[in-house]
Image (cartoon, rainbow, N blue to C red):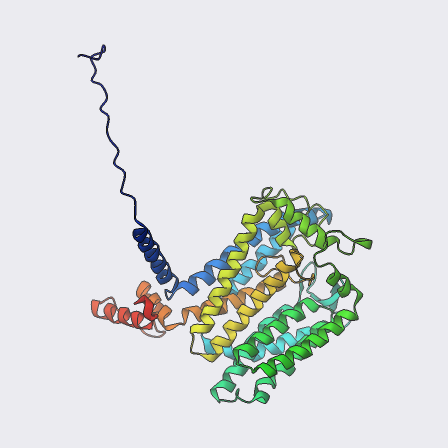
Length: 455
């Protein structure tokens, strides 16, 4: 052929047609449609349920990985196997998973019935800590009970759960009788019982846990609609007591002076705070790699407990720490959503109390690691090593899951997806029939229970 010595045809040049460029109005329309779909997906009935379950699961699993990485050197220094602390944390997480499942399947009435027994047991154990020969001191705080061997429990951690359940039941009963309009009924006996728990905790010197209980108390008072004068009065009393406790303790004063410190100072008073900043600074964007932390080799005290977030920042970098913050933010949003959408006063107070508890504890722990707050000695919820903190927290997460499932729209959506969800005990069949008529009825109920913008 002409133009080709090999006899082959020359390649055909094809013109690639590019799609026409979108106008500004078209781009705005696409963005608007994306935002609308995202908002509808975010407002679905099961969003809170999936956020609580998925967020807590991811935090716990990532916490197990980081406990194993951060505790190996500490275990070897104590002549223990490298996986010693990981195995104990995994056992606690397994027991906590059972508690979470049980709590998520329990009806609200049973949760209310457990409020007083849990409070009584918590007060008894917290008083037992101060008995010589039974209570034991760890890092200068007398707030532990030895169970023999290497197992100890910290009753004050169960006091948080007891305060949430008991206060929610108390406030719900008073609201049902329209008594919360009187400030006496709002304060008594809620504030005296909370102060009793705070006194038992402060006898052992654990001010970090006392701060968490104070945050729970203020969160419950805010949910109950306490007037500003009453709120300011209780806050003033708590602040005055806190200042006195800090001023009378040289250790607490030293921790307060370490906020924003960049040098260990005289006597290495700020050693832990400074090396926590070193760990975060050396992590960079993506971190040095899982297991490659340098600070955990004896430089950073409590690397697998109170300062595990610093090791996370060193090994997983800014991406890892932001992921942890995003998971806690999603968990807090879901808890607020459950508390805001329910009509049951007990569910509202209990969900708000649990959300305040987990959020405040996470803020205090992370703020101390970042050098923005004094070191309070509280673990990162669901993440740090410690079975005494993990068990009641996972039970509290089970509470939130149960409340999220109990929303009318969520129950209807689950009934449509899982026919056996609404099965009644003692009946031979399912409460949800597969007939088209029953299907359409449940679909209309789910649509009616959803917000107006989602229908």
